[in-house]
Length: 274
Image (tube, rainbow, N blue to C red; front, side):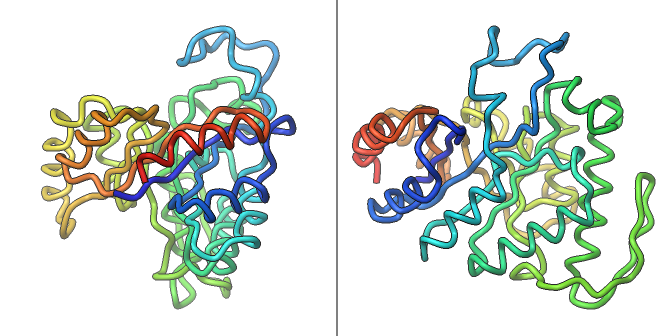
């Protein structure tokens, strides 16, 4: 089973270059970074992880800039977002950034897609909360049109793009795409429509939810099986054995949003799982 990591990289933590080099040298498989453009001070939305909201949420580095640094100093380390708030981006610009990172990294990028929890943050991007999921679905279709080998137009409910020359292209026509969120028919409809699999936070309850996801995958006419990558996991030997028994072949472990010394100590501890 491949062991990747995720961390809230901020202006107060270990730097991306140092972390990426240490991960690759130690044999870890990947680095996934989260995204928040800003956290409005006046916020009625309760934080799902509890209040007060941890300090790092308002200090995150731009994941694409940080992953670009990581790509430049590594050769094997896989790179991903966990997650990108697609509804909060201009899709033409986002498609270019994704394709460029995937191209420059040699096809090592995974796009984690999410819908967000912070109503006020999304509103500042002009996002209507009730339609953010369908907006994301439409923007994913628009980006796939730009990634297509031949110039392809997209006309959607939320946006359109003319048939265009748009290079570079991500490897394989699109990066690997995983959708994050809580299990259920609504989430699984997004996974089966435009993704390669699911990014379940914490990875609990998979015994019950995996059959439902696989059934939705088959019903949608998708070949094979969906990829499932438990995300932001605090590991124990028993937990990782459970994932292996389920046929999981990648897990993403949570690193503390801390300085270099603490992060490297955590990597030393996590090395037992490699």
